[in-house]
Amino acid sequence: MRDVAVIGVGLTKFGELWDRSFRQLIAEAGSKAILDAGIEGKDIDALYIGSMSSGRFVDQEHVGALVAEVSGFSHLHIPATRVEGACASGGLAVREGFLSIASGMNDIVIVGGIEKMNDVGGTAATETLATAADQEWEAFFGATFPGIYAMIATRHMHEYGTTREDLAHVAVKNHANGALNPYAQYQSPISLESVLRATMVAYPLGLMDCSPVSDGAASIVLCAADKAKKYTDKLVRIAASGQASDTLALHGRRDICTLDATVHASRMAYKQAKVTPKDIDFAEVHDCFTIAEICAIEDLGIVEKGQGGKAVQQGITTLNGSFPVNTSGGLKAKGHPVGATGVAQVVEATLQLRGDAGKRQVPDAKRGMAHNVGGSGATCVVHILEAM
Amino acid sequence: MKEGVARFWREIPQRYNFLGNVCSSCDRVFFPPREACPFCRRKSMGKMKEQYLSGHGEVISYTVIHVGPEDFEEQVPYPVAIIQLDEGPRITGQIVDCDPDDVKIGMKVESTFRKIQQDGCSGAIYYGYKFLKSHNSNK
Ligand SMILES: [Zn+2]
Image 1 (cartoon, rainbow over the protein chains, first blue to last red):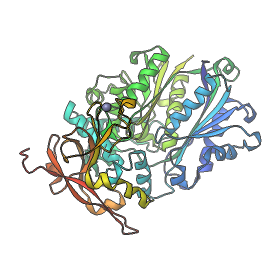
Image 2: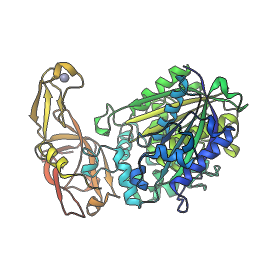
Image 3: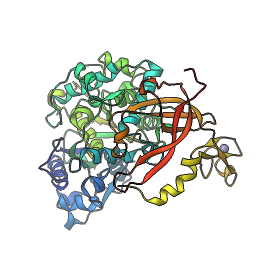
Image 4: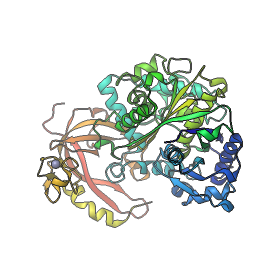
């Protein structure tokens, strides 16, 4: 396997972008990444795009070729492939790009992620997200997507004494970080009280425990590491890529409040990178709901199983804590355009490792992790990135 | 957005009758039924036997849905739980005829046959199992 480096990153603002189209968003993110990398279209060997449900959100499938077209690559005829794994689509696209270079097949690849969710109403958006769950054996019976994560939370509270306040602290922390991120959907801090008092969505999760419906796109340019020095001095290497799967339905899993796919994907990544969680300086984790961040830090091995709530309460995962989590604001505050999320996590990790994260910079960050989950844990992809 | 009629025809034996199957190699019970046992794999091929389940079980986790999908809007707030059936399999279903606040982990439940949802556009009604607190449960 060849070493692979991230040589360019690009993001659009995340949010309710009524005046921007699917095509405009992905073209903006892609061209920013290409400019950042200092490459030209003709240097690109392949394109991978993560999108969960362009068909239901904007009534358009076949978006691999479409993204190549709106990026101005049609005349170059580069291979363009769409990758889907629900909310992990972006992370999977990063992994496909990584593998295609590591294998020796390609030298330079552009990876994108996008979702344009606000062109349909809130109900249609929620029902589309529910297609990431098991339609025949969960959704049919009235289980919503927040409801499935709520059942993870109820069991976690029962087994480990986790409280609604612990969950609320995740939202407060991520909004505090989002306030420092000019690309975030929400850029103002919130109080613990406001999270606890928010309208109930699916007990024990209230509205402020949930990530928002978002529009947005993200892009990165990957390059074989031995050829990357030509383009940049601040090299960031993808030290590992891990992926794992599990049952679509939550009820089919070994344990209700452990995401075994996260456990397996992260162990695969630690082994590849020859590191342990202690060697990692920060992480972007998949906090589609507050409980998801608590499970993530446990299942990634950052804290012991059951101690996630306490760790958040104690401030370990804040920007100034011993292990900053979701410096970007996470899905909760930065926003969660599902297909874009996994790519945007790698963008944030790259900015941190280059020292370009501005007010939310983790001092002396050398190694970071990006953790992207599909559905309630049926797909997980983990990347470890290192400053070279 | 509604799924085709054929899918619901196929699912009737399970949704209406709790029909699962058992691996005659390791005696594990599956619901919904599987083509092969994931533990015994090749050894179980052609040796999966149909088995009706009792519909009795215990709540492993639950939520109370306050914001429901369109076809369930009239039912909110309603409890949904993961139930471990006495025969082993875990499934997701609604708990009915009780105060949502009464649902607890460990509560014993039994199945009942009910209307699950009504398609607002076509008026089609879908039936299946839901769960009641067991009569002989003190929890
Ligand atoms: Zn068996």
